[in-house]
Image 1: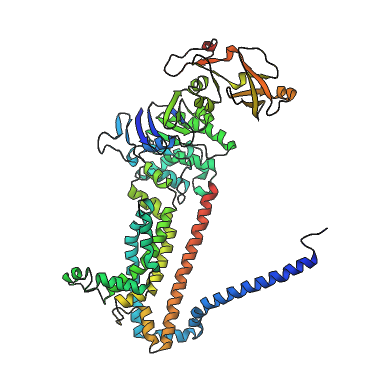
Image 2 (image 1 turned 135 degrees about the vertical axis):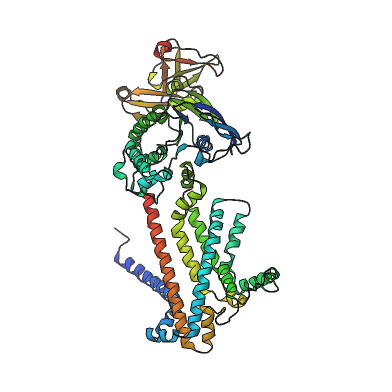
Length: 284
Length: 341
């Protein structure tokens, strides 16, 4: 009787399998090392005390404060303007909606420097709308307003896309039934749509915040790199790199840690959303 | 009294129907996609017809002839139960039921929620989340949520089709009791004749957006107006020479290997057989001639051992036949029908 499990044949396959697994493991190890080493190196080059000492400089504080202020302002604007857009896009269909969807996502893939150039062309002193702004005595370039605009432009799509998907995944019957239970569209939005889309909205907000905190290219092109005015944390790292490597490393470590925590929160929220969706499915 | 007349072009046909419904349960029965659910959505205000008028107890809910004469769904006093029950997954059973009465003061609200929990018998589930409920429990909570608002008309879209067969019969009985206690115009949409027969005071059979027959369950089964209706009620309907049709029940058909020489007899092939309790239901037919259903007692089936594809003689006694006049003419009773009906 010949079986698949005969010893000779089994060993030959075993060696081949072993080689295959080894090759796969090697490929995975190389790519993981490439991805993680630069990030980890920031932490291993100096101890926590050293990190803190290096961070403890006026330039770093200034930059950190500006980054937090502008990033949270951007986040507020993104949520305030992005939520209605995401809701509208989840509810309507029309000719050319695909094009609009792709357009909304463009800032994710467009080079940030190009975004900065675009912002300059529209809002710069000599730009399309620059005249309108300066007529009111407002000059946005090289101010914190420009920083917020750059961050909002670059990081907004992360929130809009995730939130739109979150709204779309809510069962269409729920808002319909809510209406027949005497609740207006506005009430239905707050009592049904927002609570059910909340995990997605939070994940989108965290992604946008992380992206805004790290924004570099569009900011340096559109807002410039003026310490205390438009020099955000990533720009300060770039500047520090040219004078004091240790300070740059310490600042990078802080930024990385923040990004990691935000991303980790996103994955937690996603896990909880997935398990509660499972609970919903069980009953049906 | 709910009175409506609506017209709406759908992809494959035009929905076009008018009905007047008193304080009774009216069942709309038809295949999926015949426009039943669309009708309910229009009545609930979730969709607009191309033309139409909906009136409830003299109050106009919709009139396409008068511009802007549309009452929003939230102001229609409608109860609307959907097939999936659509319980709000983030709210407990109590909060689901209280969802539509949040404007009432707390005392009144609690009282009504308690009443509704008792009405559908789910008091023990008050704190449960929808995700942990069975299909039958979800249906009852959805029913309570719709009724707690004391709607003035009630629309139920396939209220039983999400349930498995064992719970279905029990829940159907409970639903019937609840609907009978309501005394408001009620429309139930279903594709199942059993549901229609049990729940409906009257039945309207729908095909491609139009009502092809209305009547009580018994009337519809006794004299199906068309082959379409006959198929729903499992009644045999066979055309005869003068344009009339005759209807008879599957359990009146006798099957034999030799011709009996009766007035209504067909030589016919056995195309399918299915055991139904003490009977075997035969699906009889052939390339020409009618398609018939015949219920053969199981013990006779055991003796005769008919097989699929076999050609047999099916006959029905003249006394068991009901003649159905073509639509638009006076119905004519079968010879012994008068005392039966």
